Image 1 (cartoon, rainbow, N blue to C red):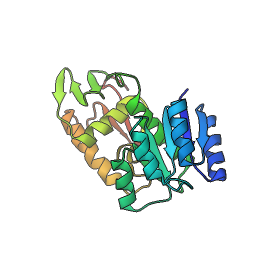
Image 2 (image 1 turned 120 degrees about the vertical axis):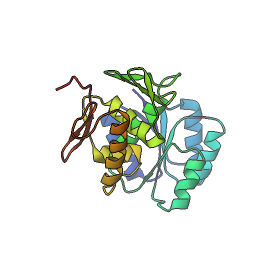
Image 3 (image 1 turned 90 degrees about the horizontal axis):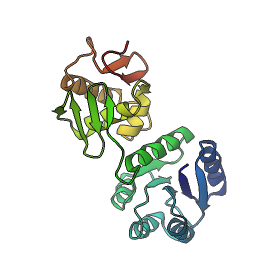
Length: 228
């Protein structure tokens, strides 16, 4: 069970986040100010923090900077600030992800899962094998039948997401949210292009799929060529 520290001064938002997180078996602690958040982060060592930037005592960006001086705990910023400069400043200060209010519960949960996957374990997550395809998230390398595959950053991120959920259909909405950090539609073409590039590097095509199977109108499934 992962522990989440929710740093949010709005009591109603805090309560709804507590309900959503506990409903997904997270252990939740909360803080309504920047100073109490820093104390909780140090004393309680949560697995991940959801941080609002509009706090009553210290600006959340300052809290993030102070936190990074003493801890490497992953932080998902959840705030109403939606301008590009605020997003860049938070990511540069050490945020692992950035959510703009209002956001859906499912999107928050997906972001938490994605960040926790990236930092899981003292040595990082283990390589994933799907048939003769191996994806190593620590070295960010992939190989097919023992031969390395040259992948761009986004190609690797896409392949790793699909490998984590091998055998499942992953929707384009989920792919956009987790790989491109785009919570809404409009990026289908981006996904299609990267899938086409991946297919080429895996030695297959849409007409003759090997590992990458398109489910029309839904998304993608990664599975070994021997699967039906």
